[in-house]
Amino acid sequence: MRNTRGTSRGNQSTDKRPAAAGRKPVASKRPATDKKGPTDKKGPTDKKTVTDRDKRKYIDYKIKVKKGDPLPSFNEDQVRLNKYLSNAGICSRREADVLIQTGVVSVNGKIVTELGYKIAPEDVIQYDGETINAETKRYVLLNKPKGFITTMDDPRGRKTVMTLVKKACRERIYPVGRLDRETTGLLLFTNDGDMAKKLTHPRYQAKKIYHVELNKSVTKEDMEKLMRGVDLEDGKARVDEVSYIENGNSTEVGVEIHSGKNRIVRRLFEAMGYVVVKLDRVQFAGLTKKDLPRGFYRHLTEQEVSFLKMTK
Image (tube, rainbow, N blue to C red; front, side, top):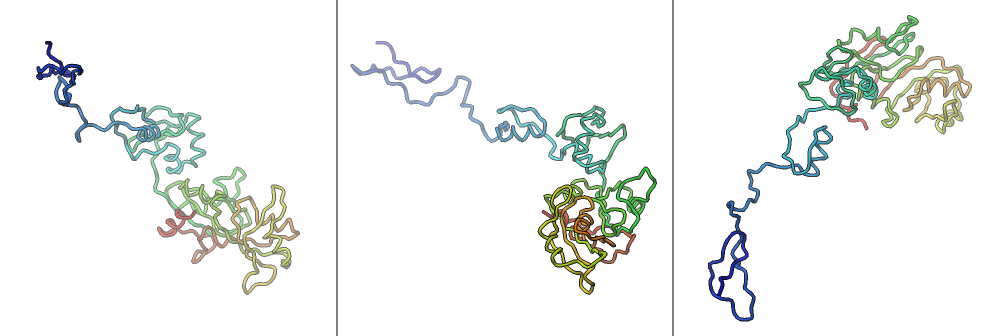
């Protein structure tokens, strides 16, 4: 009779006994092997390959990969180009997106217009032909006097708050929010775009407290109305808290508010028939005027900066 072959790949059975009558030949139970050598199971020294999770991660870093490819290396220190511009004190992130799209920003000599583009620490970034570097973050608190407008410059030649802080640091800093010309008190300056956005965005509700002096006594009914809300030309607005100033008279009140609308405190009282005689911001996002005379500035402490960054 013919020899029975085993079914293992590439090997011939050595069992030459005939199969029993009425039974089909039984395949050898020996483990299959490859002619090319031992089985190619992945050992601990094999290279790692891209998984679905890795793929999502590398797509975020603008690196094209396919599932099963070897894991490419990349720089964990990469940051978005708009964030870099903001950190350098050029502008806010939103404004940086506009600059990128208009083609005035280059990376290593090549114009970049892609939003979300990421750069590495060794990349050379240029804006409008000039190389820029990430700056040290600066936080300057000013006790603003009357007669200064909150703007970077004024074509009409009026005094701006920037003249009061021009010697504070070498970096270009910007006012966070604004105080009108006749309002005094706390005004923060920084080149930290993320911080500025956080403190001015309604979502974070940065608390501001004002000392308001009016032309007549404020009634309790009007104080309650301020809490409920007053109709203005751009919608209803209200204060968070209002009370008479301790050791003052009924023409002076303290107002706590988080709204960042332009001239909001003045407009609220004017809508109810009052004239604001004096308006002084005495607290901003937990910062106070303590030991800071009118017209002077100081740099925030590390503890104050950390507090602002933790504010939610």
